Length: 385
Image 1 (cartoon, rainbow, N blue to C red):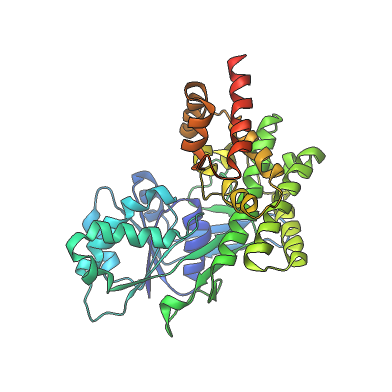
Image 2 (cartoon, rainbow, N blue to C red):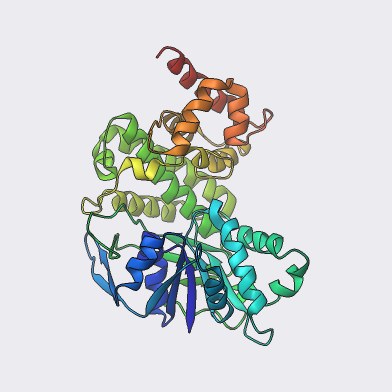
């Protein structure tokens, strides 16, 4: 069995690639970073080190890498003969992956089993997005080529921090891992991934993860950055920040209970588990890494505005989530392109225009006014500096 994984970075190697390896797949990494591709091909194995309590080391073998920038034909040939294709590239990069999948499907025998495609991204419906990009790239051939593949949405969860210097292609991760995959598209022939679990309805898993793990992680980063704290674990050691993050997650849990009927007691236990993961002192993670791309993280269906919008529509509390958005507006990291753009937009646009552009909220939405007030407050500070 063979899997092609787009995105040979830390998540690709330390999460998806590891589980595919444990499922018995030969893993072919595809990436545009030539130095990384060369480094992967220079070794016969790499180690995934789990940092913290109950952590262990996993040795990965049976892999290679191809450079999709310099050798797109090789990538297409790998896709054509693969059983599985996965991605961990970021939602905005999926459109650049789609042409390689189209080229591979064009080479694939119509009699072959359908290619099983899963986008492992921190976004709702990422595989649906990838399928749409594949259809767009295929053009007139879309119907024929899409018949050679099945596309399943997933919910993925594992913290993979910035790696220590000199680690090579080894990866340090947290012990916790979750990979939920919708079962319907596969029928009676799901992919063999022992570390994953297949569910009939993925929506509760996706939103529980995005609105708890991702919301909590980003909130910790933004409140931590505001306080001048460098590490995520240190930020949660601050009682005030811990209380703010906990309050935001209580609001997202209320939404999850209302929308999906999830048990409040189980959600409370899940929140506690998530916060304990963030507190892992052996997992060296920074507020700068977690807080990067703030414009994406305050967008309409992401980790703050998404659940806050759903809460406002149902008359549920939103104050703690809006407070996290206010902290995100203060995230100012010259090394992060979106952070620079965020601060520039705050200085150049009025509060209403910025709120509509950045959050996607209509002025008529019940959340709009309180978010606009947070934007105006940040702009007032910027005017005085």
